[in-house]
Amino acid sequence: MVTVYYTKVFTSLQEREFLSYLDKIEEERRKKILLMKKEESRLQSLTAGSLLYFALCERLGHVEKKDGSFSIGYGRNGKPYLKEYPDIHFNLSHSGRYVCCALSHTPVGVDIQKITDVKRGIAERFFTGKDNQRLEACDGEERKALFFRMWSIKESFIKLTGEGIAGGLDSFEIDWKRSVVSDGGKTEPSAYFSEWNELAGYSACVCSREPLEKVVWKKAALGCDKQSAGVDGCDCV
Image 1 (tube, rainbow, N blue to C red):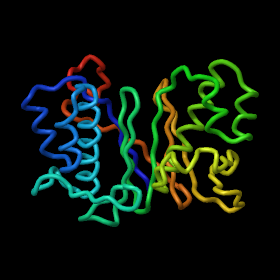
Image 2: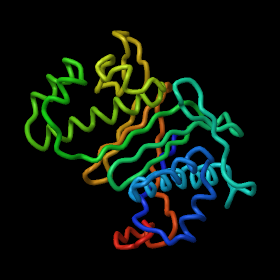
Image 3: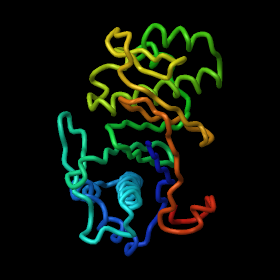
């Protein structure tokens, strides 16, 4: 089973709260946060690290990790992994007001995209001929929504493989009927994907090498009970 936790990005934190969350995230992310000049970027990265900590504690049955943060290493192409728990695979994504974290027993990729206006030439530049044919058959809001569905599927796949965008988003095809991705002209699936569209204005997808028989998307409450109640005005979400 794949579990994808999601939460809103912190909008503001008191110094005490900021340091408390900072203490729980892995060392490399912590260093980067302290060097960031933009408050928005700091809070976005802090939320991502905090969500990973929360998700791992829940998966392991811990209220908190007794010896601080989880230790993370980086493999080929910089893909992160858990040093202490190599059998737990994770992936993070953020866009707009949301961050999500996928956990699985096998390698996984996840992506969330805020649906916004997009320049028409982007699809022609990055997507395959079949992708663009499908887009050309749509107009307006339908086209925009489909573009970001495609983007989140493709991003989740390259995050699964660890190849990154340098490998090209036009190097593989989306098989919509089977919910699979086929890489390099292969007929056999290179990966399986599962979309999620429960957040208005966002497109999200998770991708795995194994068939996705069950994917659970779970809202995580970081910081206060108001978030779990869906109160947008809370300063800590």
